[in-house]
Length: 544
Ligand code: VG1
Ligand code: CO
Image (cartoon, rainbow, N blue to C red; front, top):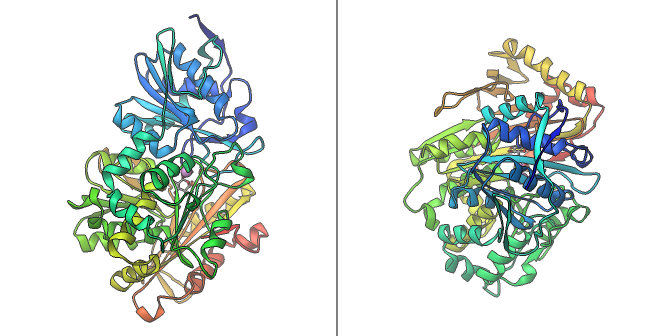
């Protein structure tokens, strides 16, 4: 096997964002583009000779081509073993599970998550390290620095490997193992959850639920877990065949892009439970009969009831949420007498706390929830948590949520996204507000007193790493919050995210529509930022 050194020129735009490198498919199709990034990763790791890694993706367009490129670079860089998901499929949480179970050195996950796919859509690649989690900032930054100075990469001449059958191949010193990407993950779920309890619920003739895989990666996982192992009727599952273009959809499990499921769940005779997951299987949306569970509430409710789940019976070590996520989780931590950490947006910031054993359950407002069973957010895990709670408490989704609000109060919460706006305008809006933060501190806005106005920074309590400029926060005396930050996962223009939170303790006011309850904060945000005026948009692209 002859190793070839290919001369290349650095690309200036390979800095990973919130979750890996995401670009248009056409960018990844440029000669050397993916090769450069993979070689830069290997270099940043100080060489990968003798290492074992996994690779797979969400099945989107360009997945298979990219896999073959990575296999060839792995062979040329001295990797000993590469585990490749059958047909190129591997969900993000399953990748994390595999790394941990087989003590691999890392994995490449090929996905642009919830971004649309197809030839005109997005592609992405992220690297996870030996703990199973997304590479921390110090590594992603090193990859970027390596990419800027890269002049060559190493590969081999070899025909494509057959990925549609479980098999083992050898390429020189490299062993390529095509493996079943579902079974290890399904085993892990069976360890955490009482499948008899959940199966009992799913098989009840008067219970019905829908899970929408959105033509993305969770289809095969859902079939194995819900139908084969838990005995649910096959028609409970929707869109379970992964497709390169996600069936033309936008694999983002929210109220806008999962519209078909939402229509079923908000119909007159709706199923008792509905859920959806995203492109790479790490997000989840939870719905009840005519009821939407806000993701910030979801993680808080799972944590508050975790003693009812087999894997968490012995108690929780600590909780954590990303900064923009509502403080509903903090109230649960206080009640349980455990820590609640506040981290920057992105799963990589939970890794150290999880590894240090200081954290059991964590979540983000962006439909991400998980625990210390892996080092990624995990869509199907969250779905199983909810089914477990419904079975154990013998209550509907709506009643479980209402019970929680009665005990802890309701944190009214909403996120407004303005997608694909002019990058200069978006940065101008944020920069302008950032400059005024000091003068806002201690002042009055509308009728509300501002107790804190800052740009969030995070000092990792485990390794002392400082991460700055993670979102502008306006916090009021009544603990309401307005947060604004720029997305780090988009591929065209800029996406501005505004987050609103208001705590309501009066039970009679808890059933308002969140947009109504948050109206004052929404209006104040416009006064503060002038987004509508400056972008010409009359409303957000997505409201959650
Ligand atoms: C978004 C979410 C963030 C999430 C990230 C990756 O990032 O806000 O909470 O961790 O996506 O999720 P941003 O920078 O666009 O706000 V996924 O499912 O794309 O891996
Ligand atoms: Co995702």
